[in-house]
Length: 352
Ligand code: MN
Ligand code: MN
Image (cartoon, rainbow, N blue to C red; front, top):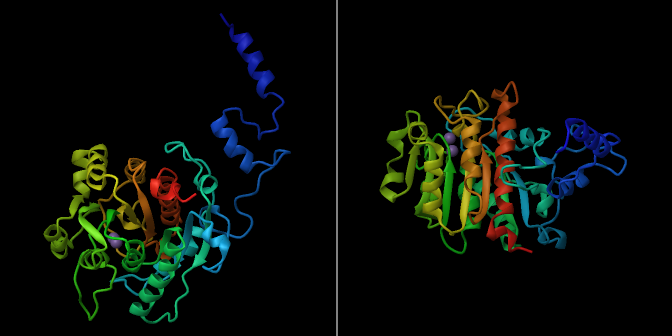
């Protein structure tokens, strides 16, 4: 039987002379060796050029061979001409780039996605005009089509939620995809004020364009006073999970429901940061009280491990209303979780 003295001596022998970067468990060692230099130093998280999740910055032309070698591209979509109330989500990509210390290791999903995948922050979608919503959507669709056609899986940062419709036009070229949509709002409203392309309607537009299979679409976290706008979701056969259902049923049951709906189908994961309660994410254009905790959102995304994720986004971070930067922090974490899901997604991993 080992005495406590023997145990202490063994620990001292193993760790006493460590320089700090040594790690013994092979799962952790592989990560640590990417982070620490040979002499035990590591880069300061606040130094250098800011990128999404600290991924390499690769402002490549889409025809560049190095671009085609990526598995996943992190893409900023700084456009908020589709908002119905408070503007500012055009600053979302910059806000998320300014967040440090997301990752490297995801202990729940068992991966270090920025290292496990060939992934880069490829910059922002160029827009021909900052003034024209529909023109911006055309620019977004054209850019994402080139990404998808190059065999690269897109993970976007908005921007308001209207950007998801042109992204889905690129992602769902082979046929309708399944959808896991986390939001306070169904975003299946119709046209008003002369356009249907606002941020309250991308998922109606996407269903009507044949981009989403409504029978494989689940919208989670729905609440607020706009329910009267969402009849399309029910009419189309989408599954709506209200915020109060999360409390009543528990997240495990909702995860099981989402997994049963999606199956092995290619699935797009869209995370509107206003799904979170304003306590956690005040920095957004249309906040709604009574929302998800960050812990609930993490449990939901963790529950999607192994699904055939073919793209995703985090949208609606508006840093002007985010005095603590907590919204950007939460948004960057959700981006990290979706990227982590891509490590275990057959859709991504078969892109060798
Ligand atoms: Mn939304
Ligand atoms: Mn919303």
